[in-house]
Length: 234
Length: 85
Image 1: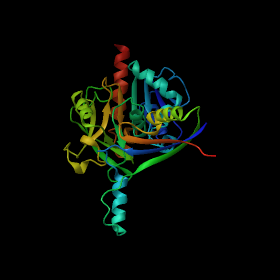
Image 2: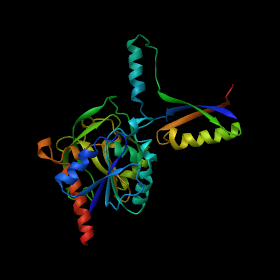
Image 3: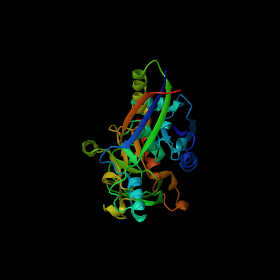
Image 4: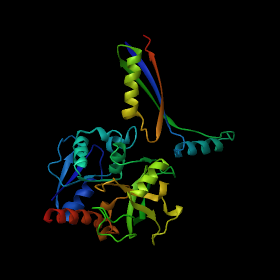
């Protein structure tokens, strides 16, 4: 089993992702430079957070044209597992690999804090170890995480159960005061229609060890690892 | 032929513009209470060498659709003129 962490110019959560996978969960992990044209037979690819290309034009808009994105497109077409965190999520929506868009936060500010999330769909490779409605504590750190899409698309997204994480209160309650950035329908993370591509604004790699205040993020990576293991042995 | 494209990208109606809202409240603070709404956007000037004005327009439109505007949230206005020497 091999994980790949893509490094764009301006990525800054790449080492955090690498650390969680390689050191905390001890799985084979490699960095993939954005100019590479193949994914070196990785089983799962992570697009990490950061400010790829300085967030010029729109967040994720330039990274989308990096050579590695064609390989990722092909990988996704073959059912490959891809996870975009924060800027990685922004790159996936700009590429059209996930629906919607990420607008500036409704507060007009960069927000860096812990948030509570409700796991809305536990039938994905990223969340199958969670119980339905489980509440996890994972931090956000972004200026443009305000998820947006037009209402017919939202209906489809809901119907296909593509909403994976929603912002909520400590007991899973939904209320505007627990939505930090104005995201439509309190959406914090979504999956593709086949559930093999996940995009989320919160940073699970920043809370995968107790010393960091929460280890809830580890469960997402652990879900992935177990899912891959089961598939290999099955 | 040298052409100049001028492109204005704005948010599509119904897409919230937090910068616009913040600028509006700053204008109110400065005493411009008559301000009802402020919308922000982006301006691009692209100089290109093509065989005709029509060709330039076609190429600029492709640039807008592919990169300069995100069709999910943005719309654009495009003007092309011959670059005067």
